[in-house]
Length: 223
Ligand SMILES: C[S@@+](CC[C@H](N)C(=O)[O-])C[C@H]1O[C@@H](n2cnc3c(N)ncnc32)[C@H](O)[C@@H]1O
Image 1 (tube, rainbow, N blue to C red):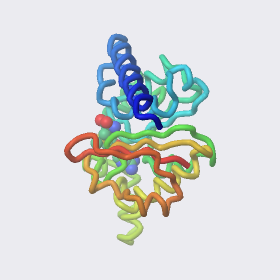
Image 2 (tube, helix red, strand yellow):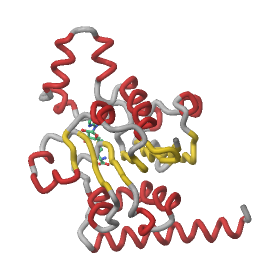
Image 3 (cartoon, rainbow, N blue to C red):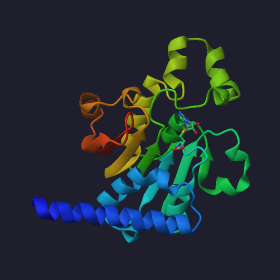
């Protein structure tokens, strides 16, 4: 691509992301700035908020930060906006439940139809140890797995274990529509299980990846 055009495109992208963040903050989405890198990648892919309307979007592990998924649902008015994850306190707040499914990520992904979701994103989730230990202690699902015995089996289903992450990516590949993307930002690159070889073995095409901080990293992968 022409270097000047690339520069103009990049400046437009930065400007449109800043506009989205500014307008969302003014509307009360107070953690929206945390999603800057993810919004950048959504905009790089889809160019404008209007273009998102026909999309089915899923967030993995929002924790307490439902700002982006709610913004997509209420302001961008996307076709479907859901998130899935475990959080001890948030789930008790009924106002949060409209786009939050209380489930571990892997069983939820397995419950979705194939070729269903256009865009999946996650921030600081698809990496080992991204779930709070308290959640594991209080979880009947996890206790069940332990009492079932075999350590291997426990590790396979263990939320955010290495195997679990790879399994999640396999399911993500199935539930994405052809050409759909997963945007995954992680806080520690070396805990993310992803590299070019793994991406290839999962059959994804890498769109872009770059560091977003000292240890953090973002990947955009296309089915
Ligand atoms: C480090 S927090 C990040 C939360 C939020 N995305 C943010 O940017 O602040 C990771 C979140 O993902 C959830 N999580 C991680 N692995 C999970 C899994 N396998 N199933 C369900 N939730 C999971 C945790 O419960 C937690 O809420």
